[in-house]
Amino acid sequence: MTIHKEGYTSIAVAAIIFGIINLLSFYFLSFNYPLLTGLISIVTLGLLIFIISFFRIPNRTLTYSDNQIIAPADGTVVAIEEVQADEYFTDRRIQVSIFMSPLNVHVNRNPVTGDVVYNQYHKGKYLVAWHPKSSTENERHTTVYRKGGKEVLTKQIAGALAKRIVNYLKAGQQVKQNEEMGFIKFGSRVDLLLPLDAKVKVKIGDKPQGGVTVVAEW
Image 1: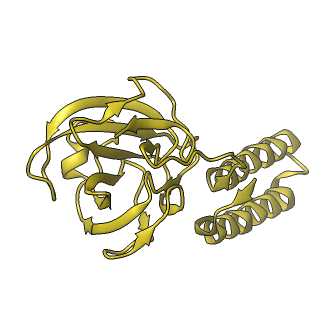
Image 2: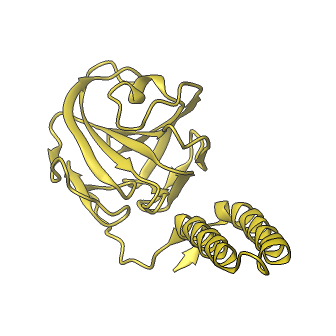
């Protein structure tokens, strides 16, 4: 396991705050309230470990396939439905939505190898990530990949806690499957818009692993 570069500053700040709180607690409370001092130490240590784990990159054997679309994120499949595309595409598409809780790995990966033909950031609201309108009204970053005449769209969507979407790509760039697309901090959602003839391989409630689980075939 390694720590993602997006976490270096957050972890450093958290560690400093952890140290200050515990030094003050030890100095002012430990003599008269030793149990309270111990509780503060346990709680703050737990929060520090949580923040470190949030930015973890676990060691995994990734899945590579030319005719398969791989999960761009860890999480839970909360929607599989046919929708009218509201951006880039003008036709109907299959939407697969993956909700990412704060406990999930938050690295986002390219679902396919291909060319980035569209890459656009949108300001928006911060509705809870599982809200149906979060796909169209929340802050989000949209990327479209083209491979062999076929295209797939991903949306990195901010949630009620996620206030920062990072996307490393740009239009015109050639990318490889499972390379990092970006990162979203503190719980969010990633949508995939697939062609109608794609064969979806996941179902509602499944818990895909980013870079590992096959979401669909095309």
